[in-house]
Image (cartoon, rainbow, N blue to C red; front, side, top):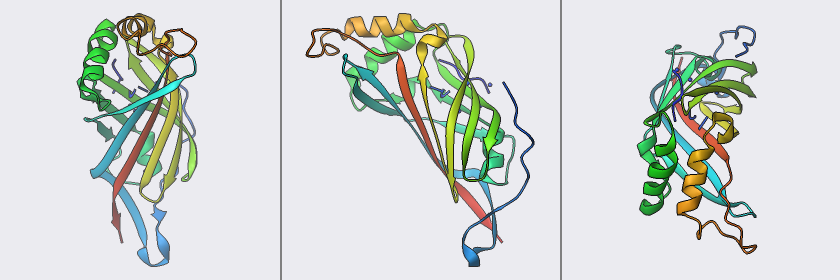
Length: 214
């Protein structure tokens, strides 16, 4: 999977152009005594989690990516300004579901079925909302295709959260889903006797940004 430099996902997810009106440049206030603060990605911490689903009853299987690089054309500013020009890059090999055997199968049978699978990349191409919450439009590259994904964002001080559900079928990646489901047929079989791996995946990015306050 490949996200263009956004998260040319996903997160890429990963996770994907229309543009919103220019964002007014302003600083976020943190408390009455803190003064005006701006934010930067240098020194920030990030976590990207994913949740896939198996069996007809949609039993969740979750994990993370151990490596995640988030960049922005805006070096310093409000969280919204950093988000509006943000992009990300994720090595697919850093996928971690806390199960080494499962990770190896996902890497071989899902990512290995994609046309481009080494790095997931994405780019934010539009934001609609304010300094508290809204929607970010993200171009997400997967299987040599770029599709737009809408991610709900929320901001709390220097904390940024982005969430979305993607369907990998939109990136013509069902061959990978079917291959993985076949090799994990027994593990993906529910009480109804049906083996199923869902094509929908939930993504969540949580970032804690560095602050610079007057």
